[in-house]
Length: 498
Image (tube, rainbow, N blue to C red; front, side, top):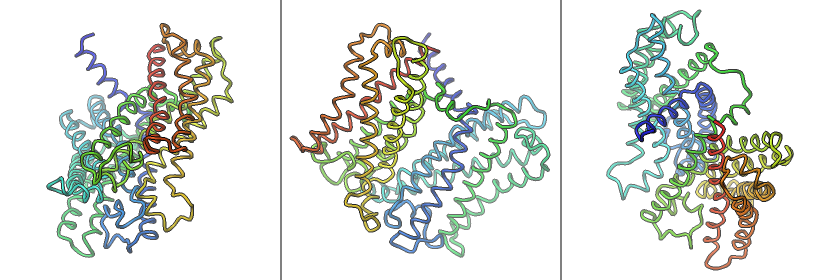
């Protein structure tokens, strides 16, 4: 196969994953629950725990993502960022539906060029939403010495322009082909006036609210920005619900348990690949930004890992925070797949025999560790400091979740999996498909997983030279270090059994 054919194949695999109804359904359901919950919690925290009298008449939406107005800006920032990622499959799926149904039905006829423009504008909007969360108000202010324009405001404009344009284009489809829309999405008994009304709202409401916002009409500019925000995310959520109904009516998905979705190789494989690339890239980029643009001299001898997630040491703390949070979510299917793999192979092979109780403990410890990773990214150093007036613990919340459940959970999972590697090296080789691999290598990997983390923990606690910050970095690398080899082995196992 030529390199060009290989590229085409990879692109097709990525596209097929993005438009997979199981993936689309999960992502939409997640977004429908997650974003409203984050916005609601963010407003509550800002109102009751914020240093100012936060309200939608006087405060812009972005204020909810700044430490100047709330002790936990992560609710807004991470809420919009993760939602933008979750809506990407829905963007591709919407184009696929319009393209395929335009060929099958007489009641709708949308050109592929038109749907391509819809997809591009939606992706531009999602990119703007994601970047507006990364470059929040605080980050925008910290980067002012290095930028001409406020990056937060720039990406907010990209967000609104992209999503508003996409809404207008989709609204035109709804108004022009109401019968086709009802036929496609399974609302056959609904009067065609409903998609027309929805389409007109998508076409006219956002531009009208934009005018009200720009003219700062009464009651206030912030109020109309909130209305603009609700109008855009309102139609996004509505389209999501409509897509869910289409998937349900077409019976595209076999009724399977959620567990079967998590251990589906088509889900596990892209999660591993993305996590293997995304996490190291974010950590390296975050470190470089802290060294080159940070207010101090950032280095692993004097600075802890968590310092990468604080505005006191870097102008963009999102690199660490988002890397840990998103990676923890991507590793959830992998955790379930590891248990599934050991359980099934223990029944089929003589070279390995791991009890389901043991693998259940492995799964629990991994999930505890992943929960810790997510919370550590959410409650970073700055959030923990801003919560000092409301906590009575001797240690701040960030320190608590860093030690337990993150380090304890992942270290325990590594130890338990390491024992399996040492005890059943031939079974591991047979499972993963590495037939030419020496079993001594498997044993060495297992011994590293068992002993390295406790040794580095002792060095860190004893504060041995060169510094405790250095040993925390080594501890971090040892815990996260065993995850990539496991991921590579799982990828090879999935490929060998394909």
